[in-house]
Image 1 (cartoon, rainbow, N blue to C red):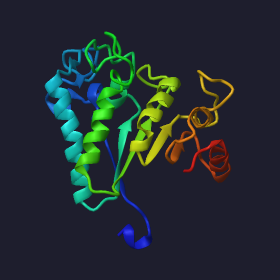
Image 2 (tube, helix red, strand yellow; image 1 turned 60 degrees about the horizontal axis):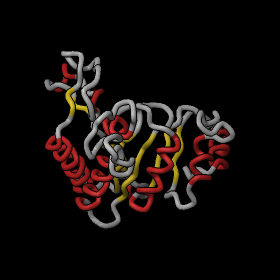
Image 3 (cartoon, one colour; image 1 turned 90 degrees about the vertical axis):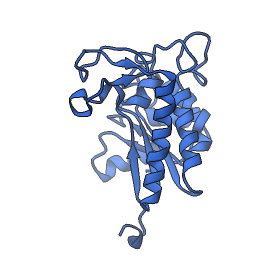
Image 4 (tube, one colour; image 1 turned 90 degrees about the horizontal axis):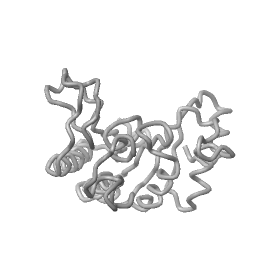
Amino acid sequence: GLHSHGALGLVQIFHAGLRAPEVLTGVQPVAPSALPCKESRSGMSREAGVPDIERIVSDFARAAQRVASAGFDGVELHGAHGYLINQCLGRETNQRRDRSGGRGGSDSKTGRFRFLLEVIAAVRCAVPPGFLIGLRLSPERNCGFSLREATALCAAVGDQLDFVHLSVWDAFQPSKEMPRATVTEACRRAMTHLPPLIVTGSVWDAEGAAQVLQQGAEL
């Protein structure tokens, strides 16, 4: 097995939200807000109610528990590429006015960040000590989730994570918001206490990998 060769095994877990095809699931896609949705037979997603949010948070925790029971060493929470966590983080897809949204007087930490914070806390409580928990993000790419918000998020949850995975499509292009740096460099400059940083995006050879390591990535 993996462990006999000195390797660790991790499983990526996610909820697709808007991107969950009703033709496969048999249910209308649920999302932070009711939005146009090509995966829905009606053409619209259903806005998640508080019971939906509580259930999905619990589902993440139970999924992580199953991963641990199967003998794996950790999970990566997929908060990138337009899936549900990303939808909750993004101002374009999260238009809620309650405590899980970015309006109505809530700041980002208690608003659009809230769902992810609850998922991380629930997963941490459900798994044994030493079990790894990481987070994948794609700032500037999906759902209106900005690089500045990504750095604020990492600052808020960095001590609760074992790694952060930046999926940036092209690790060598400058950031749209901070054009004098790549996304990796901008994150490293903004935060001195980031957990280990994984970076992916058009890294195809050893030379590219070395450049990304120079930008501040560990993997």
